[in-house]
Amino acid sequence: MKLSNILSHPPSVLTQEQRKFYHRQGYLGFPGLLGEEWLRPLQNALADVVEQTRDYRQSTRKVDIEPDHSFENPRLRRVAYLDELAPVFWDLCSESIIPDIAADLLGPDVRFRELMMNFKWAGGGAEVKWHQDIVFYPHTHSGTLQFLLMLDATGPEQGPLQVIPKSHRGPIFSHYDIRGNWTGAISENDLGGVAMDKAVSMLGPPGSLSVHHSRTIHGSARNMSERGRPAFVVTYSAADAVPYTPPAYPSVHYGRIVRGVPSRFAHHEEMVVPLPPDWSEGYTSIFDHQQDEKPGHSA
Image 1: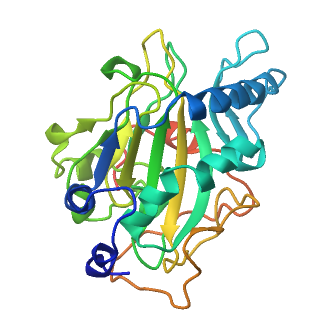
Image 2 (image 1 turned 135 degrees about the horizontal axis):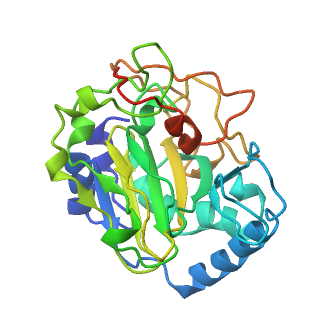
């Protein structure tokens, strides 16, 4: 759906100015949007998930652990397929205000793509290098977006999400090195032409929500503070944005219409997008791929 058509539909939860800001800048922030009625059940269900991983000695398709993970001190980088693990996780994706915001930004017909948790533990939680989401899941158009919901208060010392305003209007970069290896990150050479000094940190109290465009350049530093930075990551697409590649996390809810109705047509946008590797046989996380990147490579 074209932007003019999206904006012609009355918004359900956002103001028209918020919608225009998102499409101009490539992101939005909602400090403290979700309250205890959501946060407490989510925290309890997540604690159960972490408890079940204490015996893990290596990462799996669903759980990506840090190298120093142990029974006594569980340290996870990511848990995927969360929407399958507890009803409250799927409720978050389908019954909360989050898909309503997605519909205001993408158009009234919205598909769920995935839900995962990025933990970014205290005392060294992993960095996420600068990247664009569209290259991980290219669609017929760039009408996909990603939300981060912060379970705890997030300050500048915890490695918060950072976005580059208006970068969604710029090029889509290769996320491969000069040898053709997937790195999941934009090269230093390419970043030289990006307004990195304009980066905005998404901060706020527990329950803060952010959303960014699939072409927006974003990343986060390591968390060297004494407090963790757990964030739910929820991704949606417009119903008329059709994926070119298999999903990395094909949960039972993948592709489910959460607002509106299925589209009878695919909308195509002219753009050149590098295709990711084929992950249909298994995928861990962006952390795993980016940590394999060798210094000095450029794409």
